[in-house]
Structures are given as structure tokens and as C-alpha cells.
Image 1 (tube, rainbow, N blue to C red):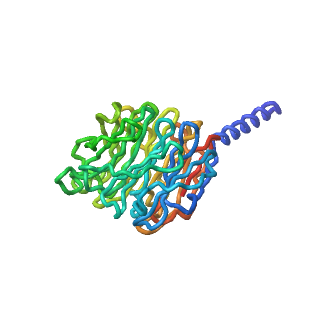
Image 2 (cartoon, rainbow, N blue to C red):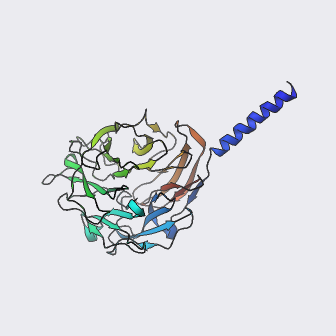
Length: 377
């Protein structure tokens, strides 16, 4: 082999190593500030990270909000709920959801504790960004909330809050539907709630749902059904007319005769909107197609056991971080795990993990301006 050929081969190997290195962003695992649990984050158009988390008695605690410009150092926390003890952490799936809308307006929704029983509570930050408005209950007729709700906001000033509850006068999971309350004025006022998608799928009573609005204003909702008590499939709803109508599809089947207490996640990338959920105690994820299906066969993270509570983040290069918990149970904590994927669904770098996810908690993930990731637990 000539020296020139050897040099060229060495250059190719070094170049490949540099490319692989550049495609492997750093993933930092950090505890929630102030010893909080159940973190939820959203990154605004300017790259600032907005965080909400829970503290206190798991049955009757409080929510706190903090903001970070660099994704590492957070501001002093501001209490979110105006009624002390009106948030709940028991069950992992009933905690706060956060969204950022037009002009950077921050919105938070959460299930009420026993002090505000049966409430889907909502608030938004004041214009100075120093405090939150008095909390409001958005439920008027759709009584019977159990599993956690979702919130989404777009750049047109629309805010959507979702939850599932039985049809009036009915009882049982098979009669549960996804309900939506919509605001067209940046969360100042809300229309009375209505059924978002009136298909007889039911809804898993103690499972959460999640919602997301992309840059075009298209609206997405993930929820778990409950047909005949055992058909607990994952459904994806999509609206292209600002929540007036929804289409839906069954994206992941699961027959199981108990309530699985699951959550879902969304992330917006340069090319795709990604979704993640749990089926058969494994985390699944994939890109959303225009017809509300998931592109190809949703990727399954096969390693580990009892995978729950997925969180997603996409960085500036379009790399996707999938994070989740393992070993969580009733009143029991567990461990967090993560893996980075490229646009083709291929693993980038090695997986990571850490112990120490507290009881009643879950994980949140976001990307920093430099392309690295942070997982809060």
C-alpha cells in the first residue's frame, strides 16, 4: 500500500470520526431546581427555556415557574397556582402542562387537587412576567376529569386546553371523550368546552393526554382509548382549522385490562413533528404524517423494562433526543434513560442513563442553542 493511499485512508477515517463526533451532541442530566418533581418544559422562538414543576404534599401541593436563557441557570421560581395546595402529583400523570404562545405569553394548565376537586385549572403569566393571574377552572359541563390534560398555543393568539371526561349523564371509560376549551384572545377568555372528536373510542380514565400546536397552527392531540375495557390503543388527533374539526387515527394498539397511567410527548423539528408514547411497557416514537398516522413502523426502544413517561427534544441539527423512565411505580421512583436519533431513525452515539428519578415524578427534555440537550429529572 503506498504512503499516499495510506494517508488518504487515514484522512477519511479521521474525517468520519469528526463527522460522527459532530453528530453526537452532549446530553446533560440535571435535577429539577429547588428539589421539584414532574418537570415540564417548552423552548420559545428566542431559545429561552420555560419550566414548570411541582413541590409539596403530593396530594395538595404547589406549582412553580422558572425561566432560563442558557438552559442551565434558571430564574428564581414564581408560584403558579393562586390557591395554595391546589395542584396534585399523585399518579405521575395529573401534573402541569405548559405552552408558550404569541409574544412569548406563558400558559399553564393542570388538574386540581381535592381542594379544587374536579377542576381543570388554567392561568397565564402577567405582562411583566413577574406573577401569574388568578387560576380559573375551565370545566363547565364536562365533569369527571381523572387523567391529566394538555395545553397548546399558536402564534395567532389561540390557546387550547384539553382533558377527557364522560359525556354528561354517562359513567364508565367507554363514554369518556376528549374535550377542548378554546381561547381566541391569548387566554383572556375561553369558549365553553366541547367534544373534540366524537368517536366511540372511550378514554383510559387514569391516563394522561397531550397536545401540541406547530408553527403552522396545526393542532395535535395524543390520547389513550378504552374500548370494551381492554382496547387501550393510542390515538392521534389532528386539526388544520384551529380546533374546529379533528381527524384521527389509531397509531398503536394495546390490549390490556387495566389502567396503565401513561403519558405522551411531542417535539417540533426542522422537517417533522415527532410524537412518543408507551405501548406494552415500551416507549414508541415516530414522525407524524399529514394523514395523522406515524411514518413507517413507529420505532420501539427495545432495551429496558417498564418504560414510561417519554420526553422528546429536537436540536438545531434536527437530531432527536428520546428520554424516558424505567422502574417507576406507585409511590416509587426509578431511573431515567435517553438515546439520540438522526432523521432516519438511526441511533447516534451511545445511550445514557441515571438513577434518582423521585417518586411521583417524570422527566423533561429540551435542546440548548448550541445543539446540546438537557434532561431534567
